[in-house]
Image (tube, rainbow, N blue to C red; front, side):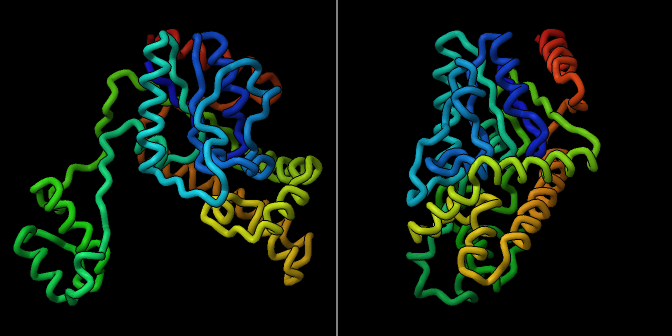
Length: 293
């Protein structure tokens, strides 16, 4: 069995995953794209040693912020980690809110190269003519050069038409259980706002300034909500208050996008979180796992 625990930012995934792992002999695999990187701790709400509570966690702090790490890399690493955990007789528990990472790891998600090097001497019309010969049913526009190259590369790699490429809704594992944590939207927004305040109390500004001073502006640094916003404050173009408000606003919007993504892409069993007594939600989730197993 593979268990996925997901949901929007701030909902309680970390605590739930650790408690579930304790009960079912599990190990946790991170599925948050920002927690892959060392030094991005507070803004990413990275699980602490104390929060891990003795449970093994994987795919956290495996890259430096000046290194590249793609969803393709995650797919390979996560699948290898799943195999390793299973071989040792334990249950993999994938935890996080980066839906594309979860999808790539568990579904028949194939990556297609879009390298343009061998086609640089070709005009869009010439590429389109090439594409029509191998994929007459294509609906790719002649001005979308990147997608045309991707479709041609896909045919060269698989001998199949890109327009007939299967949708990535087929699981490659037959024992995956998707669990989602949710709550009332206004309650979640309040939790997110308070969480940002707590991050600031814990040293978010100092952490962001340390990264700012490195002058590293990779995707790893500019993707998480919390750093790039404070960079504008450090640049002197925005006030601290403005940027804190922006961090909260962007975090709320991100949570909304996460809900939309998961509801459209995965068959998830949702649990309303009881924040007055989180143990009630833990027990509900454990009972559900027991029933399905």
